[in-house]
Amino acid sequence: MPPARRRPRTYNPAKIRTAVLTQFGNVRQAVATLTEAQLAAPTRLGDWTVRDLAAHITMAVEAISRGLDLDEPPSRGLDLLEWPFTTAPRAEGISDDTEALAAACPDLDALFARTEQRFTESLDKAPDSRLIGSRTGAMTLTDYLVTRTVELVVHTDDLNAAVPGLDIPYDRQALAACTRLLADALAAKAPGGSTEVRIPPYAVVQCVEGPRHTRGTPPNVVETDPLTWIRLATGRVVWADALADAEVSASGERADLGEFLPLMR
Image (cartoon, rainbow, N blue to C red):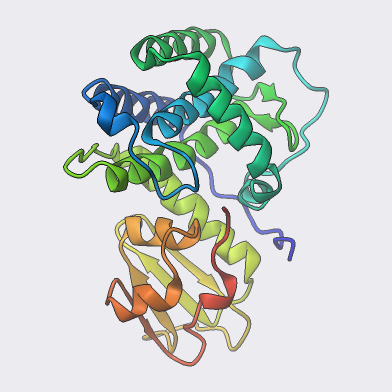
């Protein structure tokens, strides 16, 4: 189901730039500590190993540098809220590219260093409004960087899940942007005002068709923490399991979000 249009949230360009750089740096430092055995370990992402996942994270950031190397597209072709719904059709090609990169670049530290240098140099020369082409349509640099917070936060969580004790930290701005974009995507996919979804401290959205709440305690409320929300939105956790494990609370007859999740894969 295509997302309904809604007023887009604005993001501070300087904070988003810093968030992407900081979270990429967090991942780079952690990956540098991994042993060969840890890099060969499986992940929850199909056949990908930890090495494959680490290589993919550099691809996610390199996409910005590669886009800035090309001529600017003539017009915008993709809104930020549309992006989460465009990822699934590209999954197979991305997986092939990831495994090829991991095989071609065994020195992950060098790959991360090269990616970070190119990224920093590219950002220094590009205005926030600069359009960047992608496989699904041109976006502004700031919007594209917001999508990179999703890639980085989601895959940081994947790495932490794959390597016991790794515990890569999450940059607060990156976690906030990721949470908010996916919350807004839910509101776009399930437009309405009958249900309030709370993800403290970063986001509150109204969604799902039905009587609109205007005052007092909402009749339908869903609440969870940011990482659980991100896992639900990206299919890492199933709605029914999150309820059973008390990772999410849901009250009211329209508080079942299972039919709308995941938002992206």
